[in-house]
Amino acid sequence: MQMRRSVGFSEWIPWASRHLLSDGKGVYLFARCESLPPPERADPIHRNVIYVGQCGTRFKARWDLFDEGLNHPERVTQNPKHYPRASRYLELYQPGTEPLYVATLTVEELCDGFRNPGTLALLDVDVTRAGAGLPVQAFLNANGDLLAKYVERRLILLYGVRYGRRPVINRD
Image (cartoon, rainbow, N blue to C red):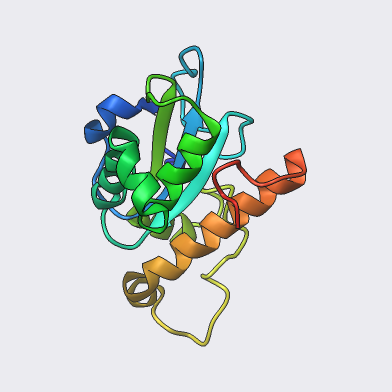
């Protein structure tokens, strides 16, 4: 009997070490932790999560913009719509990223979880039994962004159900 690996978010990585994470596309989390988070896969609806996001390009591009805003608050002041996540972060917290952590779930892992029911608890849809007989792999390869958007919205909803509000940087 072959064991299936569990699909899930990476471990929490300090913001300054984010380059250690895969630079794919998918869903990502920001959390603020005054002490080190546990060395295990990130819990996407933990109380320390401050943002749930997704990107269809590369994590690095999205994070570089956020980091630029944090390092240059004057740019955020001049153009807050260009730095929406950094703008909100700076409204709520003192400048500095020491307590900031990030975790990722790549589109490839999401697709793997989608193709293999039961490997990713966040997915409650079994595509092996749904659809119009389309080849699942080909569909997911072309539509991984839909899956990332679905998971991002689902996590924000689950967080809201648990805490009665969205993560603080997910305003709208």
